[in-house]
Image 1 (tube, rainbow, N blue to C red):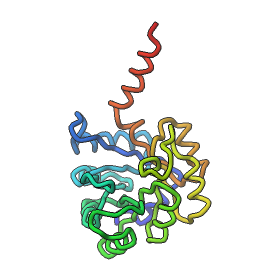
Image 2 (image 1 turned 180 degrees about the horizontal axis):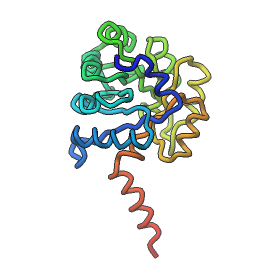
Image 3 (image 1 turned 90 degrees about the vertical axis):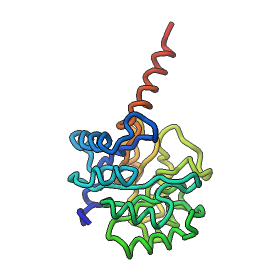
Image 4 (image 1 turned 180 degrees about the vertical axis):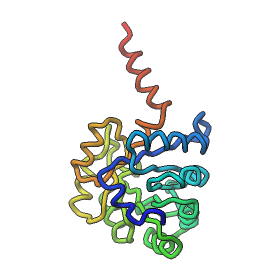
Length: 228
């Protein structure tokens, strides 16, 4: 592992998610690596990227890399299997982000079995992308290192809030001992600060920083609504 002190490096800081959807103009590992480098100039303490090529493209950056692999059309698609998780680690991720919900996984393994299998393969940290308090409790019991709120509002257990699910951050902080990475619908600096105040140890922001198509839509819609 490149950063044995990865948790200390991430604590209290901003992780920037550099991802583009398939078919988009920015969907290129070279572009994502440039976006990641720009985020570091702005003060990011970590980078989150999706896909093996993208992980390899940023693996030499001087901050911890949170890697994942979105694959398949199953409801569990964020690093959905043990083999996906191993590949993410092998590509250079310091933190392997996996689906941390209690839903069935495509390879039939439980979350605990996935964590156990990954532990024997790598010394990378494991982040569980959770959707509820029950997910977080189960992920902590399974032996992960970081709890994320990434899937709140997307699994049917909690409503999809307009901004970050601050209530969920507080619930997890009150019941779990592991560090929480707040992620999901954090669109403003004020919301990022609120996530820390709610109990998160770090904040991960993607769309509001690195997805120009969505950001442009926000402004275009506001301008259109303001027309006389």
